[in-house]
Image: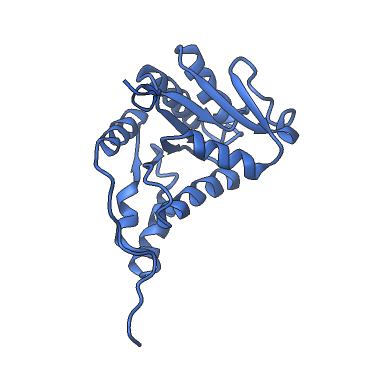
Length: 202
């Protein structure tokens, strides 16, 4: 078998460094980290030890899974890096996001704030530009991400994005559902998509 065939797949989780206002957010993060490890995938995440980030990483680590944290140097103390797992310390947020993207084969988005939203929108934007075909799964059991999914629908209906953008973005309630979708998407052949810009006579 080639190195490519035997390489362990990685799932990047975007989520908040805060716990949110309800215990369900931390519980879902823990379930997600555990589920990723139980299916023998590596967790890639933002490196922090607090909030949902810390809960996801600890659960994955405690379940015996591999974890890679990627964190900018200036956030080491602020987000309290979870030092029981492998870490890569980078100079800035841009390199953090690029490295998380490069290391991932799929993305799970849990509840979070502006940073989480930015990370999710960036990988959606890159998918729209046909730079990748990695599945993107929003996981929430309380409708947390419903407004974002509705906004994406609105953008597509207004024809500022093509219909196929729907194909790589999903919203589910459990990490098990997310992983089922990811595995299904990985098994599909590479998609040939329409040109980025449609030029029409005016």
